[in-house]
Image (cartoon, rainbow, N blue to C red):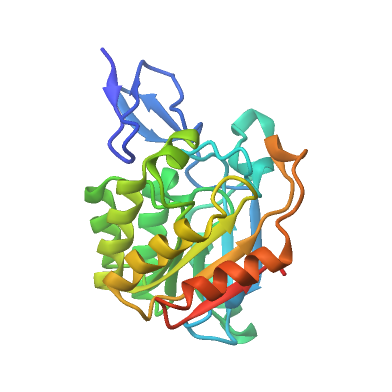
Length: 275
């Protein structure tokens, strides 16, 4: 008897002991659970602007944590060492959600405002994020999620009461492009729309030469974002050769600036990244 995962639209149907597509969820005891629960591969006290969040407590710091695994397959992944890894590929430390929240509270004296779930795709570890976020909010901390937005609506809505801000990757603005990444555009658009109704949202688009760098696409993308709220900040970010696209050139700086200018026709806050 297979069990179905209900966290993301892949809906993996798994046999006992089988890992899902994301490599971070597993069928155990007849249920699909978070196999990377509390397994932390990366932790740092970062400037909030590094998430990137420019309009959410600017000048503050946030304790940033990540695990391993991802439910998309972007060939240009900038964090492939952890996002494309499974447990046996990588070193990690195990931490309880209570200890993580304690650590975040201890760092308030160094300007920490909360916890950012980031680096890999945090929402494949949905249960750990939820447990941390509920307790962190009770203790006066802010929760930030940096995500690809490829999540089902029900678990997303369960998180919204505890999360203060999202940075959501909008990888491009065509279904054809999202098919290459093994995701779909409409799910991500839905995530952005719902999150923007409940908390602070900023959006990041990584510009990959020859893939999503047309003026028409960035115009349509920014026009759609503006239809939700023209004050949503958009980060137009430069690609560097990574993972399966090491043979590509970095995005020309002038391309990033040109596309950002086009996005400014529709949005009030557009920022160039990695330039």
